[in-house]
Image (tube, rainbow, N blue to C red):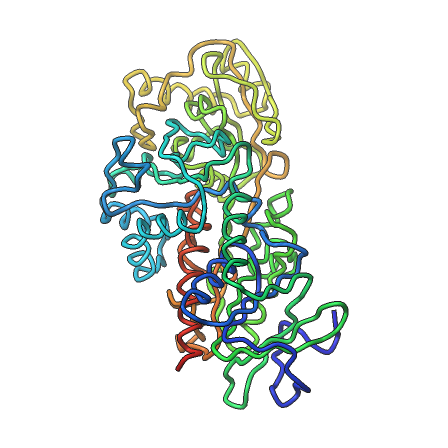
Length: 493
């Protein structure tokens, strides 16, 4: 990488020796957001050049399960085919709760009202979907079926505010290849539209004119520095900062509690966010992560009981794994246990790194073996079992479908310890943007010529405790499209 240019410092246009590329719209990053931006920009008549640092398309999006969070307007074809009616207002209320205290109401409203049309758009791009449903709590089932429960829709407190409905929509793919199928379809569409794609090309810095407007990019390809002019705008779709340990230390200190690396296709280094900040873009919710613990499957373990190192329960276990993981990471202490009995026990999945910490014929044995203060774990189980016998959970409002007394010996405690069990993460914070992708300053003023989408922007998913699987890809594709159209329109003004 050239030492003369940095994502943290824009290049004045007066220092550009020549333009090596010119297009109406320049897109940085060929994941789901960049592909969607390029498609809709090209379809509105713009010339588009797309720069990708890797040797092929996909990015982190291709590593995902491929599910996209969709619903509203009565329901998608998969929802309706399986007897679910999804009212737009229920979808909207759930998404507002999932967005947390600073949910972007304008963005959520647009998505709730446009998600059904977006699903049809995805189909037109060639993404294959069945209208089949898998009940329960599957996680990337890989069966080729479509509709899954991918969040906390049926869990408290969400179910009290919005009628529950499964909204995760997976492409028709076998194995954990849904993200690949999604990106393969979008890539083919990008190519069919004649978008100029430049692989093995790194964006080094933004170029600004005398007024501070963004008018291009400094790039590096084949160890040569080149300059690209954007007549309409630059769209940053370069991912988050899950691999930038310096930025994680600065903005997301919760990362220090986790042993595993961030989920990434290999290039989530925060460079897109840094470029936006270099010209005055505000970065918001940079402390927020998607964080999860795969304590299910097996889904029978949802009927278990999670406790901290004081023997106390702290969450309704039927919530989405990401919400559970955030409540774990919010606790003091490093050790956490899932208590199960013989009726619900199955060997934890290998990738979860959840080990069996103790086995005993009584909960007193488990308590002593783990070194708890006498009576702490036992009393927590006694209270849980007493109410579970009536199908109730007055403390944390766990749904009756996932409640049973833990009274069939032998009993076990499964170690869900931080820095030992698998707690994968990626970043949710990013540049502050309008739904159109226009990057905003700290004063809320758009920076002319600069757009962002995907995890480079802070979009729909911005609160780890409310995240549902599929929200990120939904945000990337839906608002990537809007950024593409907005940048294209600016080129024609």
